[in-house]
Image (cartoon, rainbow, N blue to C red; front, side, top):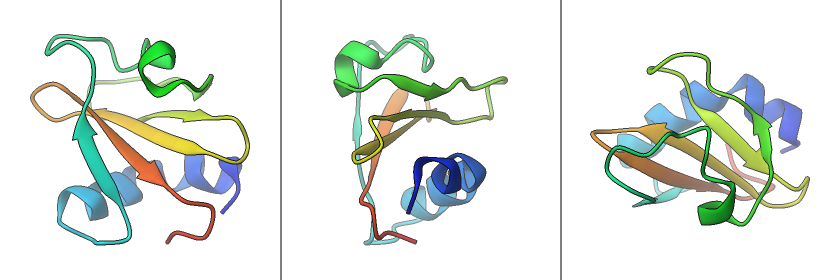
Length: 85
């Protein structure tokens, strides 16, 4: 899956991960009140897509590794492999 495909499907992937889809894993990340658009250090990846609302998902990617970050009562990171979804 390419970075642009992940950006397009970011909310769908986040919902699947939070619903227990085993293709994805997720962990809490950063401070409880951390900004999901400011997690480049925590993910060790550059921000590829900035979340535009509290219900949106930020995407961090270097083109090969992809991490979605969303707010679920604190930031969580969702790891997406290249062949996921």
